[in-house]
Length: 435
Length: 113
Image (cartoon, rainbow over all chains, first blue to last red; front, side, top):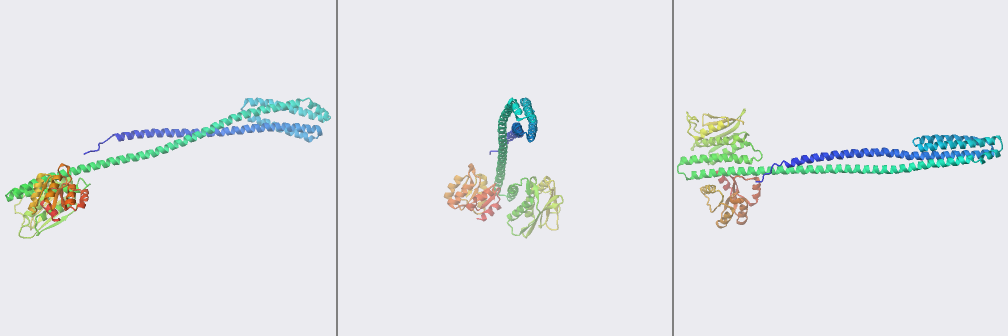
């Protein structure tokens, strides 16, 4: 018979698999955390880079504004030379103020860039120079004719200063454009980093998801394996039990057959009777096996009530007498397996005795079999309404194997054998503890 | 016909049957022998041990006896499972007698035939 070996290997490999799964989970969660951190960092970086782009635009706007203010101052100067109207001198002052504000704004915006700061210093000087020449022209016009003012302009200092202003403004713009390009490149890189982080993040999540799915299916497989092994063990057990049961009963049958054959071949009635009683005892034991086996899963328990009822009916009806009445009063009693055979043999002796000695052939008889509880004890009794026992009857003195056997078996059950002498017939009882 | 691989058990069963007034036309220890004897002896019924010598299956023999010769069987065994009862229900068995069998259980089973 192929019994499943107790294999420790699966549990070890399961342990290893569990450790592997734990390590993988730890690595994946760490990676997820890192990817998350990278993503967060990249976002902050991207935000700052976007700020820089904005900053570059602001610088360019300020430079443009500065140029415009200076140009405005120049046109106002020309208009004043032509008209002498003081409205234009106010315009010049407005442009100066605005240009000053622009310079301050540029100074603030480029504070962290030394080369731009240096350009700004030069720009400030040139701007001051340009404004000084405008002021000079305006003063010349106020005191005299437009001609004097035009003389100042013709010196060309103003135009030269303005050209330098334009050149430096262009340099400033170029530098900002260079920075802008640089930062745009950075933004492109950051964007790629963010996209990559997102992809890694998604991939890790997917990995975790699939791993969880796989773990679940592995768990299911393991469970199925265990269930399969348990089923196999159960099948093996059932097979073994069937086999043992079969052998026990076959052996009992062999013994019973030999005894019966012997009984049939002896001439002497007493000898035949003795063999037949032996046969009854063998059959009684066989019945115990039969019933316990049929009880199916409840191995270790013996339904004494059912056994008592069935054996009593069997023995009485095998007597073949219509005028022997059987009365039973049997409570449901489940005994330990160890108690089964002694109880069966006691019952067999008591009923056989009652049938033999308590049922006179010349009149109808009644046999009463009872199994019940008496506090913590069980009480099995068999009574007949025959002629009763001799006055000096004692089981110890009895030569009958039956009586001595009942005494011995009652002791084996941890109980006692009681003989009562009712008014009519005889009554025997065995009282024994529940287990 | 009695089909039983244990010689003494077979002898005992034959004795019991004869005591009851039946005639035993054949005794066999295994399925092959039983089949050969059944064809010649034409029994009314067969007492078949479910587990026969040389690993033969009494159930299969009983099926063949019933299908081809119309012989119904009475199964005798130490272990008669519910599965077995169901598996042979179709061949109309006379009954099932558990071992160790007594004169009474055998008689009761046969009286159902």
